[in-house]
Length: 404
Image (tube, rainbow, N blue to C red; front, top):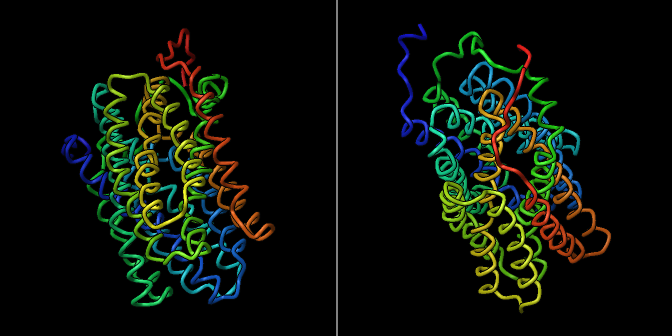
């Protein structure tokens, strides 16, 4: 049966993979809009909501390693189907949870598992296996740009849904929308994965151990930790930060939409530059620029205009780390276990996400402001810049590799 299955074209892979990422990432980037409606309606603290989102990011990262293993062995489409179903269940549970425990299980665990099976590591595995190395970085940039477009598209829609339907019905609507991932997954079905019969030069454990021992892999993980800390803290807490400062809630919605719009260009540009520049230099520049942009935003007088300018610059840098980071993994280690290794690097990103979103809520409840977390974000950006500079991007040459 596999022999009769049509070979995927690169354009098909990019189109349907981009649609999956657009939907999956578009929904999750709007979760910050629900912080105040849910906490006020349920009479919960901001830390309660932040902790559930932090768990979501941690589960996403941890489960992403195993989702990558399954996608490498059995094909991405089966993992995507599971991810779409879990996404719908998690959003429905998020809407109808009456206790902090059920809210954390649905918002944190179920949606975290769903994101592990429906975002970059899984979709990038299909891209890496079916698009040549010469075009791979740009293709990853296009897929990441699709995630940014999803944020740009979905944030205003989610804000409108909350205002028109209320926060519970808005989440119920999104749960139905998430099910569209299931039919899209079938368009990414690859030949050769029905029985996990692909021959590999390494076992999973060999590939895993090899990567962990490599200093460049460790440095890449350290930088990605910072990426997660910064973007999830800003994405979840910026709406509340601006409302606390007296700005209209619509300013936050427009700002996050601008982040998404400009990130379409930023991620595409990062992917394109990765074809000709050292990717570690791209990453170092992105992290340093983030620290500068955050510092200027905090120093400048706060107004809707300053927020929109900050959003535009930060948006250009938002997910632009994704294409060069994943391209380095593919370039150094090859494609046999790419989704798994990419998922492991992303786990570091999600530990950073956990810390960023949770510390934002925890320190706000302790101090009454976000100043300390903004300062931590600036310092971490500088450290991530320095961490990426020593990375070596040359492909590993394996001598006398034992059979898997």
